[in-house]
Length: 118
Image (cartoon, rainbow, N blue to C red; front, top):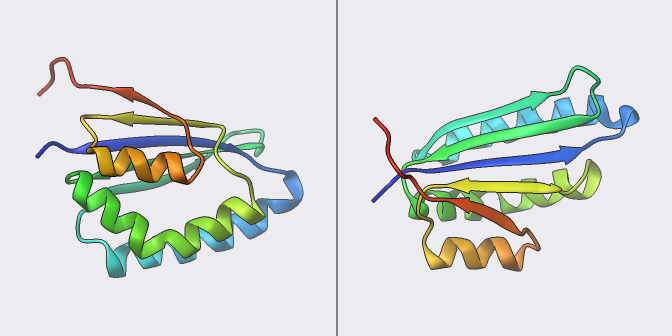
C-alpha cells in the first residue's frame, strides 16, 4: 500500500482565528490519541490570517479512512464554524472508498499519482 498525502485549503474570517486555534489544538490531540496511521498532521495559517492550509499524510488509504471515521465529528465542526475547504488535493493512489468518502463530503479533490520519488 502506498502513502496518501492530502492538502486542503480553507478561507477563514478574521473573527474566527481564535476559535480556529482552539479547535485545531483539540483536533491534533484527538489525532495523537486515535490515529496511529496518521504520519503528518500540520495546519498552516497564512501571514494575512485569512487562509489555512492543512497537510496530512497517512500510511495508506485505509489509515485515511480510519482518520475520517475517528475525527469526522471534529472535522464537521471545523468546516461548519470556520469554513469548508475550497481546494483539496490528494497525492498518491487513493482507494475507491477514500474517493467516494471525499465525494460524499462534497469535496472535489484533484488527484496526483506518484510518477517517481524516493
